[in-house]
Length: 246
Ligand SMILES: [Fe+2]
Image (tube, rainbow, N blue to C red):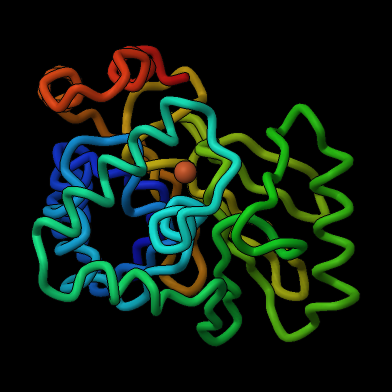
């Protein structure tokens, strides 16, 4: 079984909790859709986990900002990426060169992996499920132009949902395992491990065993991460939002 994780955002408590749960579930391989760093207080530790444990770790927009210095971030995201760059530079080793080598998409059999979307794999936001027209357009583009793939996994929007030709489904605790019928396309937003934004503070990730796709939510020690963000001198909003899931 594989785990698909995204948007870890230097949140070591969330990453540690998710990986312990994945071990319990029998996950044998991790595929990461990008944004390993940015916003959070533990960039070095989380980057080392990505380097050593993930079979795939894509270029997200925060990795891109880290290695190019170019971005359109709001002030607190910009402050955080500059702070992250200083931490990773001070740590030395090969972490920043490793981030420079990240690919913007990956292909795994019938799976296509991106950070943003099929239109722009690094930056494009797939709108939340309130905008099903965009998801429909995505599915139809997947069908017409990406015939080699059945499922596209994406991160970036920090909100989990599944779009198929049958409609858009938002996972919740009572109903969270889906099977994509043969011949159908699916667009899977896995949500965020380290900074969920769907007003659920728990980490979000997905597992896939070749047939069943399962969305997971997992509580972690939010208060510790918040305290570390404040102690690092990062913007207080970055701590507050973890407690609200925004
Ligand atoms: Fe992100």
